[in-house]
Image 1 (cartoon, rainbow, N blue to C red):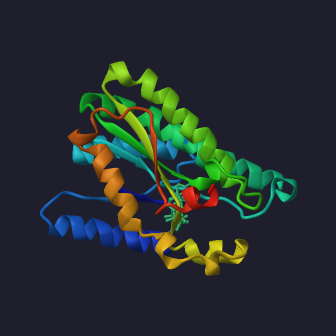
Image 2 (cartoon, rainbow, N blue to C red; image 1 turned 60 degrees about the vertical axis):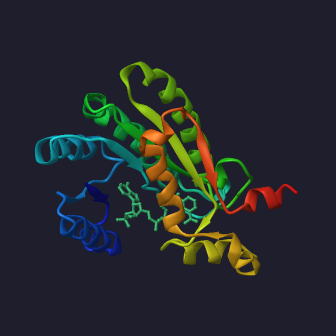
Length: 219
Ligand SMILES: NC(=O)c1ccc[n+]([C@@H]2O[C@H](COP(=O)([O-])OP(=O)(O)OC[C@H]3O[C@@H](n4cnc5c(N)ncnc54)[C@H](OP(=O)(O)O)[C@@H]3O)[C@@H](O)[C@H]2O)c1
């Protein structure tokens, strides 16, 4: 099940294309639209997974939406959107999906970013990522006895659609060595690993996939 938010945008197109690719492999797949900041929409999304696909093995929390400006310049509605999508929305997804995940000893993987651990004033999403990494630790413990594993992948600078916006707000990004740029596939590989039996010993962790960028910053 591939979720997107906006109607008619590039995310909808990409969700449909990915879903078609999965179906071409002989698997069932569904592209759906749900705004994760809307609790009812999340409930309907999970209900559809249950009725259409019959089960939910993995929940990948990838959605993110945030303004690129410092806290002192955020409007009230920016702040609400920041928290509603990136914190409460992700928590809603975990809570609503829990009954299905429990049935399949499922796994949750949250996608975080380096803003969770370094000061990034024009990127308030970073503090939401830090809060969610703490939620990952807590849920990993509280859901352990229910057979649901919770972990996260923290990406460095990933070459996705939002990369061009990052370049506008991050002075010096263009001077960064290309070898420090992470590909979406490199993130996906670690998500797949965390969803696999090979990751059975990993619980409540956030694995950094940044090609050594944070190591270099701290050197
Ligand atoms: N790019 C990077 O350098 C980088 C680095 C580290 C971590 N990450 C993380 O990786 C994830 C993907 O990032 P990205 O670069 O691919 O960002 P992106 O291009 O902005 O994509 C974000 C996706 O989230 C969806 N979304 C936003 N708000 C939503 C909501 N309320 N409900 C449901 N879906 C929603 C968007 O759908 P619509 O387009 O329909 O709004 C879009 O498909 C994010 O969690 C991001 O923080 C990115």
